[in-house]
Length: 284
Image 1 (cartoon, rainbow, N blue to C red):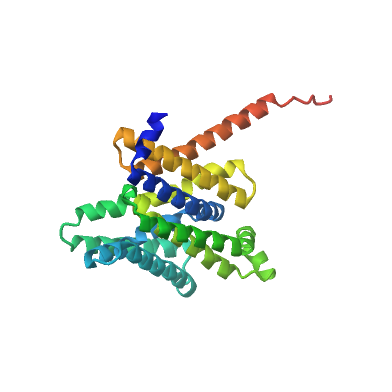
Image 2 (cartoon, helix red, strand yellow):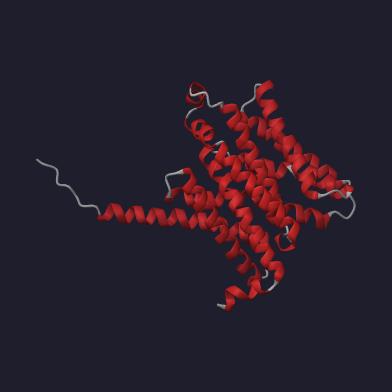
């Protein structure tokens, strides 16, 4: 057992686990809707869209989380504005702002001196640096995410089925869409400290993908995705400790591996079930 418990004898690894677990729960909630609505590109775009805010906050000596949040909110509002007023499709709006925000972030970084270490932290995170204050922020974010998911559940379900049906039922699909974008934004910003902007999408999407084949209800998928995400955090930290690899990247890779293993196991079980099914003779 020491192989699995040795890393957690250190307090900073314990904080990393609890922080990563909170991120996994939040990403399990938001990621389930991302998968149901086919919005993985939005999560990736928001993760990269935080770059200019984070870069500016770092250069100006402001709280990095505040810069990330401000940048992600600006991007979310911009996507909605382009879609409504510019008559652009949702994917086109995301693509334009994604490239624009990423370019702006690189411009800020290129004009800042000795930014290499900070840029690495922005892209890949530093889960081992999570402190007590970060745990409080993550716990609040999980509470807000859970509250949003509960209050908007009916609207989000109707929106996922058919937007016209949601309108007929008076469930205001535009409000549901705004709530969903806000939920994804919250998850991306809160997860930034743990796995960075490049890897946050893995933790947001992979556990939900792994959970989806085994459940039929949204709340059950969320719960299973959270459990898989916590397992990926634990396994990723253990692997990272013994293999001397980057913790955030290892956690994200473990989550993606779990999604692949889930799909493979489901395919094997389906094949075995079909093979074991009795053959019904066709009357001649």
